[in-house]
Image (cartoon, rainbow, N blue to C red; front, side):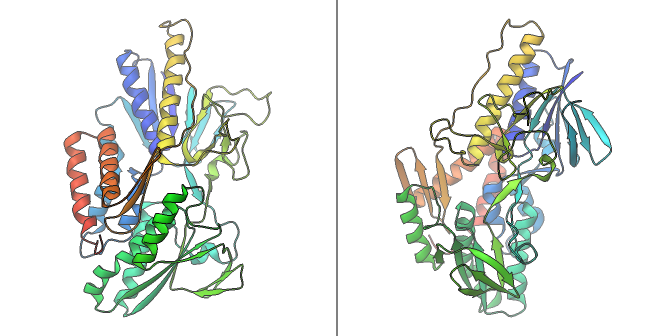
Length: 425
């Protein structure tokens, strides 16, 4: 059997695996092709909920309950599909031979390869940062942040200073929700105030966002009590102190880094063309480009999501790494692989390949409690209705990866847990 190997079970990788498997079944080609999905984790994380996981009191939900509503076991998601899942670490790949190396020893031969390994935290070699900061990339990261705050409260700390470095969407969502969490913490520890500040290198938070959105978010952050230090960069970290470019020194109890990502380490040794942050450069059909034109790979190699860099032909700038883009890219990759397979099997004379076209995707930025700012085309919606839209987007995504009753049950359970922390509408 020929193998379609997909590395990574994030938004794009999971979508591609599901779509290809379903299409092969409809073409009655499952006896000739095997779809293999590989990830080092046994679950698919809905990353937009990580800030909620990081700010949920232990009295409201334990780790198992939070895992159920934010990180979904992969095998149950694919149990009705002809899809093989391997919980393995991808350590290397030989693209000339078409081999993927797992755990340093095991090899799997790929006739089609989709790289969707996501990204890793980039500390930019800032002295003391990696050893002092917490990140928010995984479910484990979110639990680590929650435990750090909780443990300080348990120790009797009355004023906990938290610095969030990076004023992008992740930093804003987490900082605002941490501040709103104070109401619940005061119930647990009597006196436990969180002093939360965002440090952002750009002129404003949310660089690149619509100015209307930025103003609304800044107003909301001010209301909930989050400080903003704009046009400030971190230069080094020493003994619970953050040193900034202006010369300012900010003491902290907890430092959270939301200041950047880089390509997965496994990509660094592959003979693929990449940009400064190590992401693989792709063309319109989402095929990865070789380092030199003379390199010939055994299989077609595609990339999507945080793994890749796709330059918008209109602006010649890389498009943002967002979940909606990864899902759209997965749809293009899936269709192009299926078109090649149809031609291989005489079902069509020519392959009708699709080209990925970048667009301005709608986005929703929650800013503490039952409040979010949503931008859909030219329309900006803020407040409670933005928060409602956020919930509907989450539910719609769950519908796309699991049975409807399961999706609705998990969504309602998550809604019940997360809204109990909200003390501010």
